[in-house]
Amino acid sequence: MIRLFVGLELPAKLRERLAGLGAGIEGVRWVDEENLHLTLRFIGEVDEAQAEDIVEALDRVQVPPFRIVLDGLGTFGAGVRLRAVWVAVQPSPPLEALHRKIERAVVRAGLPAEGRRFVPHVTLARLGSVAAREKLGPFIAYNAGFRSRPIRVSSFTLFQSFLTGEGADYVAVERFDLALEEA
Ligand code: 3AM
Image (cartoon, rainbow, N blue to C red; front, side, top):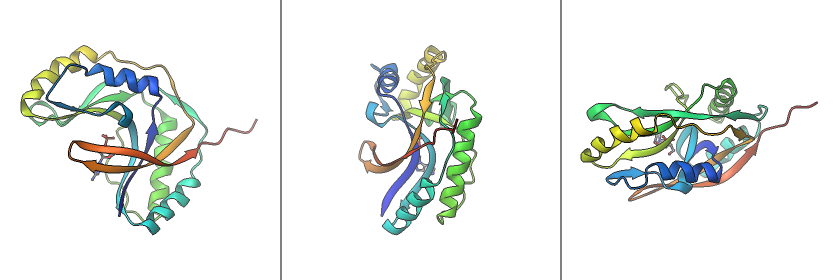
């Protein structure tokens, strides 16, 4: 079985900048620079045949390329239930459209529909220890004004996720180019 998800890769310079935000804060499980991404659809464990069906379905997803802007910070959970800190994405109808089409594609490939609302985000950190929670409050306040340059989205990626003792490693297994609009 292989553990898969669909997401957007981020430009190296942006990943470097994002990884730098948390430098020096310990006790928090920061996402490694090379693993920073935006999840479009978590798939989970599938076998080879299912993976092939998913690739075939994703291959048919088409939207014109577009741009997104990362803007501000958000969290999953709050207070004593804080689980993750992430960078938010400015509302983007094209990103929503891409997400919808990917959702339809994976359902067509035989996966159960995702019941949860799509909250586009780039996870920076997961809570490592309870003590770390106190450090994240000031971190979030300090970085609340984070904003990226516009990021061009011209492809999306099927990632394989390898769970390790320290978290997960993500490897791009297939890239899907978005079509350019005809003139
Ligand atoms: O994009 P982020 O890093 O927030 O937390 C996992 C990660 O999210 C999430 O999928 C992304 C790529 O691994 N994930 C892991 N297990 C999940 C599950 N069972 C899940 N999302 C939904 N359901």
